[in-house]
Length: 304
Ligand code: GLN
Image (cartoon, rainbow, N blue to C red; front, top):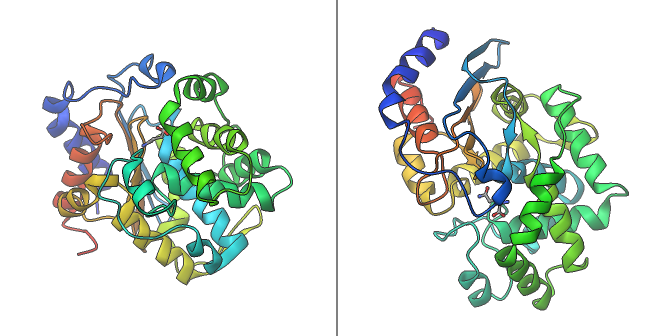
Protein backbone atom coordinates (compact mmCIF):
# COMPACT_ATOMS: atom_id res chain seq x y z
CA UNK A 1 0.00 0.00 0.00
CA UNK A 2 1.46 3.37 -1.02
CA UNK A 3 0.51 5.30 2.12
CA UNK A 4 2.65 8.32 1.23
CA UNK A 5 0.81 8.87 -2.04
CA UNK A 6 -2.53 8.28 -0.35
CA UNK A 7 -1.76 10.88 2.34
CA UNK A 8 -0.79 13.44 -0.29
CA UNK A 9 -3.95 12.78 -2.28
CA UNK A 10 -6.06 13.06 0.89
CA UNK A 11 -4.51 16.43 1.73
CA UNK A 12 -5.51 17.86 -1.65
CA UNK A 13 -9.05 16.58 -1.25
CA UNK A 14 -9.61 18.06 2.21
CA UNK A 15 -8.29 21.54 1.42
CA UNK A 16 -11.81 22.81 0.58
CA UNK A 17 -12.74 22.15 4.23
CA UNK A 18 -9.78 24.13 5.60
CA UNK A 19 -11.86 26.98 7.02
CA UNK A 20 -14.76 24.89 8.36
CA UNK A 21 -15.31 24.76 12.12
CA UNK A 22 -13.53 26.74 14.81
CA UNK A 23 -10.78 26.03 17.33
CA UNK A 24 -11.69 25.38 20.97
CA UNK A 25 -11.86 28.84 22.51
CA UNK A 26 -13.26 27.90 25.92
CA UNK A 27 -9.67 27.25 26.93
CA UNK A 28 -8.01 30.67 26.42
CA UNK A 29 -4.51 29.26 25.87
CA UNK A 30 -5.81 27.01 23.06
CA UNK A 31 -7.50 29.91 21.29
CA UNK A 32 -4.01 31.29 20.61
CA UNK A 33 -3.01 28.33 18.38
CA UNK A 34 -2.76 28.98 14.61
CA UNK A 35 -5.98 27.33 13.32
CA UNK A 36 -4.54 26.68 9.86
CA UNK A 37 -2.05 24.05 10.97
CA UNK A 38 -2.35 20.51 9.65
CA UNK A 39 -0.36 17.33 10.09
CA UNK A 40 -0.94 13.64 9.47
CA UNK A 41 1.23 10.58 10.06
CA UNK A 42 0.80 6.84 9.61
CA UNK A 43 2.99 4.24 11.32
CA UNK A 44 2.71 0.68 10.07
CA UNK A 45 3.42 -2.28 12.31
CA UNK A 46 6.15 -3.43 9.94
CA UNK A 47 8.10 -0.25 10.71
CA UNK A 48 6.99 2.23 8.04
CA UNK A 49 6.39 5.91 8.78
CA UNK A 50 4.53 8.15 6.33
CA UNK A 51 3.93 11.81 7.10
CA UNK A 52 2.68 15.00 5.47
CA UNK A 53 2.65 18.72 6.31
CA UNK A 54 3.34 19.76 9.94
CA UNK A 55 3.64 16.29 11.43
CA UNK A 56 6.56 17.36 13.63
CA UNK A 57 4.75 20.27 15.25
CA UNK A 58 3.53 19.56 18.77
CA UNK A 59 0.00 20.44 19.85
CA UNK A 60 -2.16 20.02 22.94
CA UNK A 61 -3.34 16.40 22.91
CA UNK A 62 -6.16 17.14 25.39
CA UNK A 63 -8.55 14.16 25.69
CA UNK A 64 -6.32 11.82 23.69
CA UNK A 65 -4.37 11.56 26.96
CA UNK A 66 -7.36 9.69 28.46
CA UNK A 67 -6.29 6.61 26.49
CA UNK A 68 -2.89 6.64 28.21
CA UNK A 69 -4.58 7.10 31.59
CA UNK A 70 -6.84 4.09 31.02
CA UNK A 71 -3.86 1.95 29.97
CA UNK A 72 -2.08 2.81 33.23
CA UNK A 73 -5.16 2.13 35.36
CA UNK A 74 -5.83 -1.22 33.67
CA UNK A 75 -2.23 -2.23 34.22
CA UNK A 76 -2.46 -1.35 37.93
CA UNK A 77 -6.01 -2.45 38.73
CA UNK A 78 -7.21 -4.81 36.01
CA UNK A 79 -10.95 -5.45 35.97
CA UNK A 80 -11.38 -3.49 39.24
CA UNK A 81 -11.40 -0.35 37.07
CA UNK A 82 -14.89 -1.16 35.82
CA UNK A 83 -16.41 -1.00 39.30
CA UNK A 84 -16.08 2.77 39.26
CA UNK A 85 -16.51 3.62 35.59
CA UNK A 86 -18.63 2.09 32.81
CA UNK A 87 -17.73 1.20 29.25
CA UNK A 88 -20.82 2.31 27.38
CA UNK A 89 -21.02 5.24 24.96
CA UNK A 90 -22.44 8.28 26.69
CA UNK A 91 -24.30 9.85 23.77
CA UNK A 92 -23.65 13.16 25.51
CA UNK A 93 -20.97 15.84 25.34
CA UNK A 94 -17.57 15.08 26.88
CA UNK A 95 -18.25 17.54 29.71
CA UNK A 96 -21.91 16.79 30.32
CA UNK A 97 -23.05 16.92 33.93
CA UNK A 98 -26.67 15.81 33.54
CA UNK A 99 -26.05 12.11 32.91
CA UNK A 100 -23.56 11.95 35.78
CA UNK A 101 -26.17 13.24 38.20
CA UNK A 102 -28.89 10.89 36.97
CA UNK A 103 -26.50 7.94 37.16
CA UNK A 104 -25.33 8.78 40.69
CA UNK A 105 -21.73 9.65 39.95
CA UNK A 106 -20.88 6.54 37.90
CA UNK A 107 -19.39 7.88 34.64
CA UNK A 108 -20.47 6.10 31.46
CA UNK A 109 -16.93 5.53 30.21
CA UNK A 110 -13.26 6.46 30.81
CA UNK A 111 -13.09 8.82 27.80
CA UNK A 112 -15.58 11.45 28.93
CA UNK A 113 -14.21 13.97 31.42
CA UNK A 114 -15.96 12.43 34.44
CA UNK A 115 -14.65 8.95 33.61
CA UNK A 116 -11.13 10.21 33.09
CA UNK A 117 -11.19 11.95 36.48
CA UNK A 118 -12.16 8.68 38.20
CA UNK A 119 -9.35 6.89 36.35
CA UNK A 120 -6.87 9.59 37.43
CA UNK A 121 -8.10 9.29 41.01
CA UNK A 122 -7.11 5.60 40.83
CA UNK A 123 -3.64 6.56 39.58
CA UNK A 124 -3.26 9.20 42.29
CA UNK A 125 -3.94 6.67 45.04
CA UNK A 126 -1.65 4.02 43.50
CA UNK A 127 1.42 5.92 42.29
CA UNK A 128 4.12 7.77 44.25
CA UNK A 129 4.78 10.44 41.59
CA UNK A 130 1.71 10.35 39.33
CA UNK A 131 2.59 13.27 37.04
CA UNK A 132 6.15 12.07 36.56
CA UNK A 133 5.16 8.45 36.00
CA UNK A 134 2.44 9.47 33.54
CA UNK A 135 4.88 11.48 31.47
CA UNK A 136 7.48 8.75 31.63
CA UNK A 137 4.94 6.24 30.26
CA UNK A 138 3.96 8.54 27.38
CA UNK A 139 7.61 9.23 26.57
CA UNK A 140 8.45 5.51 26.45
CA UNK A 141 5.35 4.71 24.39
CA UNK A 142 6.25 7.28 21.76
CA UNK A 143 10.04 6.85 22.06
CA UNK A 144 10.42 10.59 22.61
CA UNK A 145 12.12 11.85 25.76
CA UNK A 146 11.23 15.51 25.37
CA UNK A 147 7.42 15.23 25.50
CA UNK A 148 6.11 17.40 28.31
CA UNK A 149 3.21 19.21 29.94
CA UNK A 150 2.39 22.79 28.97
CA UNK A 151 1.71 24.48 32.28
CA UNK A 152 0.40 27.63 30.60
CA UNK A 153 -2.39 25.53 29.07
CA UNK A 154 -3.09 23.55 32.24
CA UNK A 155 -3.27 26.77 34.30
CA UNK A 156 -5.50 28.39 31.71
CA UNK A 157 -7.82 25.38 31.87
CA UNK A 158 -7.97 25.42 35.65
CA UNK A 159 -8.76 29.13 35.74
CA UNK A 160 -11.75 28.68 33.44
CA UNK A 161 -12.61 25.07 34.31
CA UNK A 162 -15.91 25.72 36.06
CA UNK A 163 -17.71 22.81 34.42
CA UNK A 164 -14.88 20.35 35.04
CA UNK A 165 -14.79 21.48 38.67
CA UNK A 166 -18.54 20.82 38.88
CA UNK A 167 -18.00 17.32 37.45
CA UNK A 168 -15.27 16.58 40.00
CA UNK A 169 -17.46 17.85 42.83
CA UNK A 170 -20.35 15.69 41.64
CA UNK A 171 -18.06 12.64 41.63
CA UNK A 172 -16.82 13.47 45.11
CA UNK A 173 -20.39 13.95 46.38
CA UNK A 174 -21.24 10.46 45.09
CA UNK A 175 -18.09 9.06 46.76
CA UNK A 176 -16.45 8.14 43.48
CA UNK A 177 -13.27 10.12 44.20
CA UNK A 178 -10.88 9.19 47.00
CA UNK A 179 -8.58 12.18 46.57
CA UNK A 180 -9.45 15.82 47.06
CA UNK A 181 -11.27 17.50 44.19
CA UNK A 182 -8.50 20.04 43.63
CA UNK A 183 -5.82 17.34 43.41
CA UNK A 184 -7.77 15.37 40.80
CA UNK A 185 -8.42 18.53 38.77
CA UNK A 186 -4.77 19.47 38.87
CA UNK A 187 -3.72 16.05 37.51
CA UNK A 188 -6.56 16.07 34.96
CA UNK A 189 -5.55 19.44 33.50
CA UNK A 190 -1.89 18.40 33.48
CA UNK A 191 -2.48 15.32 31.33
CA UNK A 192 -4.76 17.30 28.97
CA UNK A 193 -1.95 19.82 28.47
CA UNK A 194 0.59 17.26 27.18
CA UNK A 195 1.96 18.31 23.81
CA UNK A 196 2.85 15.82 21.09
CA UNK A 197 3.29 15.88 17.33
CA UNK A 198 1.41 13.67 14.87
CA UNK A 199 4.57 11.59 14.49
CA UNK A 200 4.82 11.06 18.25
CA UNK A 201 1.13 10.26 18.60
CA UNK A 202 1.17 7.77 15.74
CA UNK A 203 4.18 6.07 17.34
CA UNK A 204 2.44 5.94 20.73
CA UNK A 205 -0.73 4.44 19.26
CA UNK A 206 1.18 1.81 17.32
CA UNK A 207 1.35 -0.19 20.55
CA UNK A 208 -2.46 -0.37 20.53
CA UNK A 209 -2.56 -1.36 16.85
CA UNK A 210 0.01 -4.04 17.61
CA UNK A 211 -2.19 -5.74 20.21
CA UNK A 212 -0.80 -9.20 19.49
CA UNK A 213 2.58 -8.11 20.90
CA UNK A 214 3.01 -7.83 24.65
CA UNK A 215 2.41 -4.26 25.80
CA UNK A 216 5.14 -3.19 28.24
CA UNK A 217 6.30 0.43 28.55
CA UNK A 218 7.76 2.06 31.64
CA UNK A 219 6.25 -0.61 33.87
CA UNK A 220 2.79 -0.35 32.28
CA UNK A 221 2.00 -3.86 31.24
CA UNK A 222 -1.15 -5.06 29.43
CA UNK A 223 -2.14 -8.42 28.00
CA UNK A 224 -3.16 -8.57 24.35
CA UNK A 225 -6.72 -9.12 25.49
CA UNK A 226 -6.62 -5.93 27.57
CA UNK A 227 -5.28 -3.93 24.63
CA UNK A 228 -7.96 -5.40 22.37
CA UNK A 229 -10.60 -4.35 24.87
CA UNK A 230 -9.17 -0.86 25.12
CA UNK A 231 -9.51 -0.66 21.35
CA UNK A 232 -13.14 -1.70 21.70
CA UNK A 233 -13.75 1.16 24.14
CA UNK A 234 -12.05 3.57 21.72
CA UNK A 235 -14.37 2.34 18.98
CA UNK A 236 -17.55 2.83 21.01
CA UNK A 237 -16.62 5.82 23.18
CA UNK A 238 -13.67 7.63 21.57
CA UNK A 239 -15.65 10.48 20.03
CA UNK A 240 -18.26 11.34 22.68
CA UNK A 241 -21.66 11.93 21.09
CA UNK A 242 -20.13 11.47 17.65
CA UNK A 243 -18.81 7.93 18.21
CA UNK A 244 -21.49 6.45 15.95
CA UNK A 245 -20.82 8.96 13.19
CA UNK A 246 -17.06 8.36 13.37
CA UNK A 247 -17.64 4.63 13.22
CA UNK A 248 -19.92 5.13 10.21
CA UNK A 249 -17.58 7.45 8.33
CA UNK A 250 -14.17 6.10 9.32
CA UNK A 251 -14.56 2.65 10.85
CA UNK A 252 -11.50 2.65 13.09
CA UNK A 253 -11.09 2.77 16.89
CA UNK A 254 -9.66 6.11 17.93
CA UNK A 255 -9.66 9.06 20.27
CA UNK A 256 -10.03 12.78 19.67
CA UNK A 257 -9.12 15.87 21.68
CA UNK A 258 -10.24 19.50 21.60
CA UNK A 259 -6.71 20.52 20.56
CA UNK A 260 -7.81 19.21 17.13
CA UNK A 261 -5.89 15.94 17.26
CA UNK A 262 -7.23 12.47 16.48
CA UNK A 263 -5.32 9.22 16.91
CA UNK A 264 -6.74 6.02 15.45
CA UNK A 265 -5.64 2.48 14.77
CA UNK A 266 -6.19 -0.28 12.29
CA UNK A 267 -5.52 -3.38 14.44
CA UNK A 268 -2.53 -5.42 13.27
CA UNK A 269 -1.86 -2.94 10.46
CA UNK A 270 -1.20 0.71 11.37
CA UNK A 271 -1.75 3.68 13.66
CA UNK A 272 -2.55 7.13 12.36
CA UNK A 273 -2.55 10.60 13.89
CA UNK A 274 -4.00 13.72 12.35
CA UNK A 275 -4.16 17.31 13.59
CA UNK A 276 -6.17 20.32 12.51
CA UNK A 277 -7.41 22.73 15.23
CA UNK A 278 -10.80 23.69 13.72
CA UNK A 279 -13.50 21.64 15.44
CA UNK A 280 -17.09 20.75 14.67
CA UNK A 281 -19.90 21.29 17.18
CA UNK A 282 -19.09 17.98 18.93
CA UNK A 283 -15.50 19.04 19.64
CA UNK A 284 -13.88 16.87 16.96
CA UNK A 285 -11.50 18.09 14.23
CA UNK A 286 -13.36 18.78 10.97
CA UNK A 287 -10.41 18.14 8.66
CA UNK A 288 -9.19 15.31 10.87
CA UNK A 289 -12.41 13.33 10.49
CA UNK A 290 -12.55 14.10 6.76
CA UNK A 291 -8.94 12.94 6.29
CA UNK A 292 -9.54 9.68 8.16
CA UNK A 293 -12.76 9.05 6.25
CA UNK A 294 -10.80 9.40 3.01
CA UNK A 295 -8.00 7.18 4.35
CA UNK A 296 -10.27 4.20 4.98
CA UNK A 297 -12.19 4.86 1.75
CA UNK A 298 -9.11 5.11 -0.46
CA UNK A 299 -7.30 2.17 1.11
CA UNK A 300 -10.56 0.18 1.27
CA UNK A 301 -9.36 -0.87 4.73
CA UNK A 302 -11.43 -0.53 7.85
CA UNK A 303 -12.28 -2.92 10.66
CA UNK A 304 -15.67 -3.63 9.05
N1 GLN B 1 -9.27 19.51 28.76
C1 GLN B 1 -10.47 19.42 28.00
C2 GLN B 1 -11.66 19.59 28.89
O1 GLN B 1 -11.68 19.06 29.94
C3 GLN B 1 -10.51 18.08 27.31
C4 GLN B 1 -11.73 17.91 26.47
C5 GLN B 1 -11.49 17.23 25.17
O2 GLN B 1 -10.40 17.17 24.63
N2 GLN B 1 -12.56 16.74 24.61
O3 GLN B 1 -12.61 20.26 28.57
